[in-house]
Image 1 (cartoon, rainbow, N blue to C red):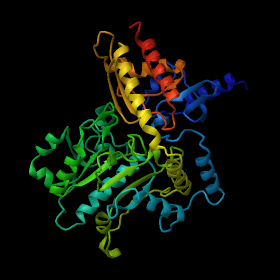
Image 2 (cartoon, rainbow, N blue to C red):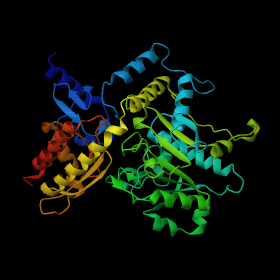
Image 3 (cartoon, one colour):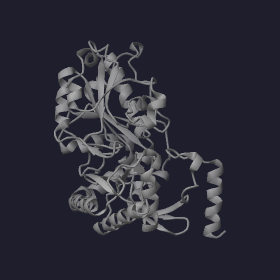
Image 4 (cartoon, rainbow, N blue to C red):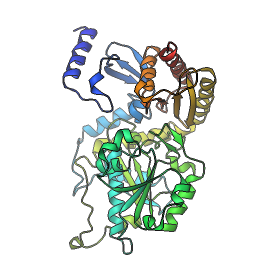
Length: 438
């Protein structure tokens, strides 16, 4: 088959059999071409017709060091030569031991000391919620603590427990009433205004530290994490940081919470844990939480939760290699000039492109709000973000919106300054192409 024939064949099979997440299937493939991504190298993706694009959203926020990084590939291949997978239910393996020790080593001694592995961001949050819930009801004096607090417009995953925290109606309204009991607040002022009975029944509060992702990439006020930590400590409430998006350099720090030096009771990570090369997640927690599960088997304190691919050896190998790359390639030290360039170029975009109403940059994360040329907002039905992203493709950039009118740029950390300029040129041109005739 020619590349065009092969691509057409794959698209036909996709339309006949595949079901894509977060996409209206009734219009899938009708309003824009279905791209078949075939290869990747560095920040570049190549489709089945040979066209190249900058990976502007890190393949849904997971890729850290770029595609086809030789160290990551070699580590995974070397592990395959030994064993692909073995159960972590009743057995262990050296890579999981080393990875757990390495993850906790990034935090002060005697803070986060234990690691519970799972599969992805949703299951990391699910694990943290269940650990917080069960540890509370197994701790004398905390038996009534069976609720959670989350923030408005939050997104913490799609499994039922994690989804019950969700603050975005589009994703979660149909599932209200299932999962955890949750109170939503918008700010620290709302949190302080909660009645004492609600606080007394709350076992944990969940937040994406420094910046809230699906909520238009909106940063939190500086110093908020310290206030939140103090508030939780004064009420005996466990603090859960969702670092699924923000972890592994996205904010300029290995973990976002390090920006303000705040240590949670649970830290959930996934996406970039393996450099984005294979699914894997981890929850870091404290010895105090761990001790709440200790006791004779007859006491029923065991945490009966886990997954078939918990501590997957190939994932552990990739994660160790990714952390090696951070150190050996000095990844974090290379970020400040790129972060400054993103700030500079995003401000230029704001002031020169009439279809942009706001930009919000935090580290290597950028949210861009779209508007009509007269400044009025688009309606959700117009799906402005989708149209803009499709229009960026001919200019060599692939990315996706969050909500209907906010476009995200979150490239792999290895992107060069020249590649960043190319990405911003594509953002500018694609947005203009999408709306100039509106």
